[in-house]
Image (cartoon, rainbow, N blue to C red; front, side):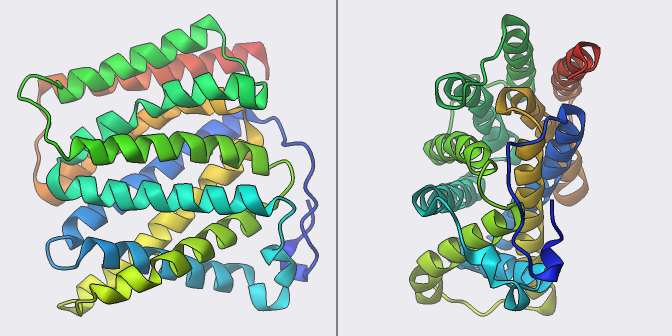
Length: 301
């Protein structure tokens, strides 16, 4: 891969196969997404949701332009598959809008649990769309991980809030986004995918973001608003690189590790103390991911 900072368009070929590195990157991406959700939940008390979404993508674009010096390498703004890029960008926008709407009403653990249905959708779509078929053991690991999430959240015991529909919509957009990301890594550069998705989302959200504008109450709020772009953009860049290195069904089970990050952030930021079932469920989630990691290592892929 050529150095993008020298103004030469990144050469894109068949995605590399390095599943262990891809798994590590997807875990770090989940940490970034958890930080994004926690920050958004904190900000929603004082800043309108649509404004947070808009500024999340504005800061995403500004950071990307500086990081990749787009003014000296405009080839990053080119794509071989513009329709897929636009659809993927709107999927990312849909993920963000519906997830931020959900965290306004639901606990972080609840929104995360619903999002964790995504690996089933990703694994199911990856076969016919990408030709990346999952075997029975990988399906079993995904099912075990999802059971761990159910242990944590205990859905149905107290009735699910109506806002759960927002998380369902976000989950569907996420699954499509993951599949499109894997497709585009074969033809487009990682940096270009990150920049273009941010530009499309920021432009699309500008009218809505300005229409509900409320001046943030203090400098800390401004810092956190900028941080949403850092967490969101950084997380999705790691997400893109991970899907360049490993097939979607291999990465899908490791989305479950986000529940571990959510438990930690819930305690540190919102004072939520995890109970016994939370710890048991999180252990099951981690165990299912470690099993997939073990299988990939002994297969030598």
